[in-house]
Image (cartoon, rainbow over all chains, first blue to last red; front, side, top):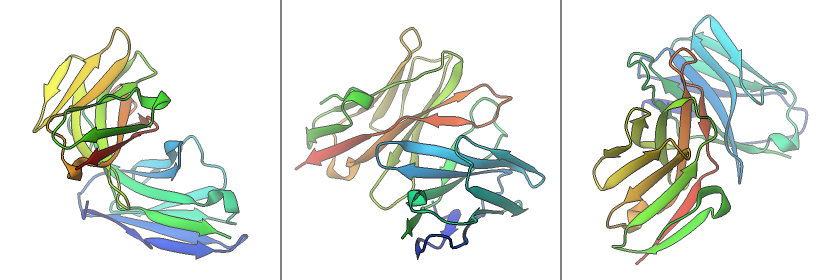
Length: 115
Length: 114
């Protein structure tokens, strides 16, 4: 979905390096999410934010941190990358406007390889 | 062709056949369900959704069926086309106040043979 963009799309880094993945959205949604996708494990939630002042850990937050710089921007950082963080990372957004029916919209993903 | 979700993560069908992709969800309190399609190299794309007060919902060439008694969700694709080849995920959401804390299934790879 072009309304949710992620940079970079591909990244190779070395163990111990700090890297940042960025997500921007033009959908005007308050809620943003970071997921990790590994083969055979589906999508797992790393962090989520329901507004600029709200940050919450997901099921696999260890080794990651996030920053919600603005409504439209949500960044994911790996403070000291390790090889098992090699994965496909997705950002998503949602709008709580329609109660009980909150669809998430995903960006194109960032493929990260940690050597 | 028909899959059984986690136990058969691949489904291969002939072009023009109907496809059925199954998903067993985990939480009886889940009240909203979504099917996503993920093509190679792209992010998941919304296909169709259903709320727990319904047992069937139809879209264009797709139908979602919900059986709350056995906590089962299925996606039916009519007249499957090569462009339908992708991984399909179901997702469940629990409650409005918890926001959109979706839990995703592992996905089923659908391959459409010409």
